[in-house]
Image (cartoon, rainbow, N blue to C red):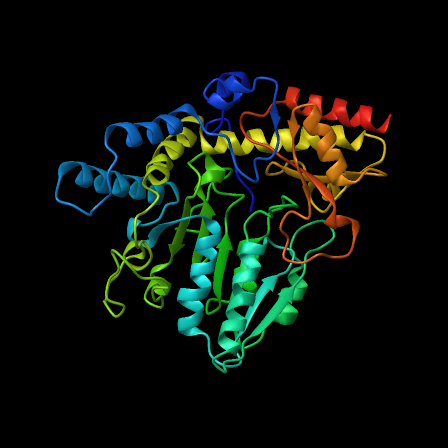
Length: 413
């Protein structure tokens, strides 16, 4: 996955100007926020959208025949259309969920329960996020209870942080039905070579993509990306909390069955159902859904290619600074492969200092990072289970990184 950028599609980002659009930084002017892979701060347009809904036209969507309810329903569909356009998809193929975790679970429950048979295999990387791994381990247990035995086949990650494609080839059999992959790894920050994986597994194997760390960072274009399902989190791309997106290709949409039912549910056997028909039951997180449209408009105003360029340059700057800190060791990712850029994520450790202790030390200086095992599906029993993760966004600057480096230098002096 190489993001092609030129001067016509990118411009330099003024981080001081960008920060002025985020109320968080007005309230916390001395804070360096470097935990963006967990969640992003919200621009004023998103905060305003949520506030406007609660204060001016709050109502349940599609539950009544009065104007406010119709207005909310219309606004949801406008946000769906905006989301679909952003990902170069059709709106009928998109459902809003409570987050990427629910999206990834719904794939296992609505596709897996309906399609997997005795002896079938599902491939996962146990070093991916738990939300990408655990739904399939859970499904295996559920099917075991019905006497259906499926096999979970693990594949590995190279020491430099991308998938070991050899282990995918070795694990692939005629019984392989699905492979779960990440677009950009949530800890290692590496391009996970989705197109190469599709070439390896062929057209018949379902590819489920976790795009949480790519959506809003680089172009995610589903009309050309060779995957069958895509899941991402709205709150990691500036939208409100409690919002995810689930997309399915047309050829897979007909293979799905509802995994939950309630208000708004359709008949399970109804033909021609959309993703919203299948999965959006009960009262939705309407303000977060509406904020998704505002978040995407904000991203488009900044420019997705400019965001990608900014993150690539800042990742490199961070790596070069960390490299000069005595005792700094990089986890898998840009620090080990000496990549020319990156996607805004760098894991590292300092010799002799536990990652959690370093996190507390940085917090005392108002520098916020993530530490620990970062919700990986398995512990490796190595030092890579205890890493500090710096994750960057468009409001981060070289000055932010310099403050981090200064504090780290003092910690080891």
